[in-house]
Image 1 (cartoon, rainbow, N blue to C red):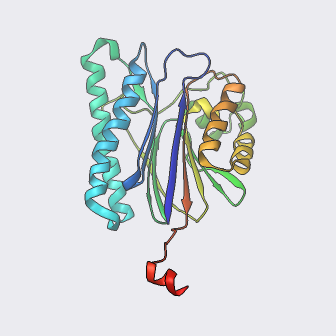
Image 2: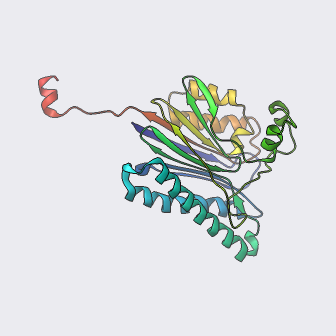
Image 3: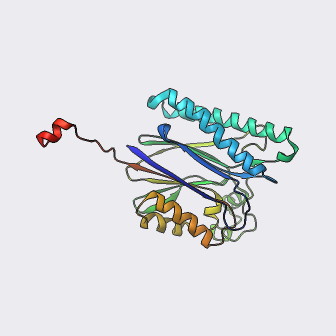
Length: 261
């Protein structure tokens, strides 16, 4: 199984700068998305530090470990790299007054043939599109989600709540952070969407599903998702990462072609 991966990021219509950061490492199938927070350009610094650090450190480990590392080993390596990234951001925030209080959400995934090891912190999300159905496979670390879980409000009421964007976990805000990690089985044709809340707050899951079902390519889907968020107001930075599981295309050798095999 191979993976096609693409990204798209946009500042939106109301923000002067983009505090999101999104990247991937094609050889190791490592995907990372972060949504920064903090005054001035601090959110931009935090998200950029997170993606750069994790891509470098976890990417290096994955390249050395090869394709034979099991899920447990990948999970532990991911946790260690995120812990180190947290310390780096936290120390930078405490040693530079202009960066005080900065932090970032995080979604990080490693695709290994038919396995996805997926970690997240905060309210940036990962969705899976499979067989015509869209499913959110991360659970927001937010005050709103806690209220839903406690039965204080309904998911419908949450759509118009004033408590949006209040996260209960963030990378770099404290000297320790808990990364939630889960393992998922990947099927051929699956599309995975990582996104900042600049997308999920602006358009519904139904709208996301309609775009993924109607687009002819990942690039087109990514552009349409960002455009839809902007069409709905674009009140925040918008970032998406799409990864699709595809069948390996094996080219026949010259002799086989000559023999018509």
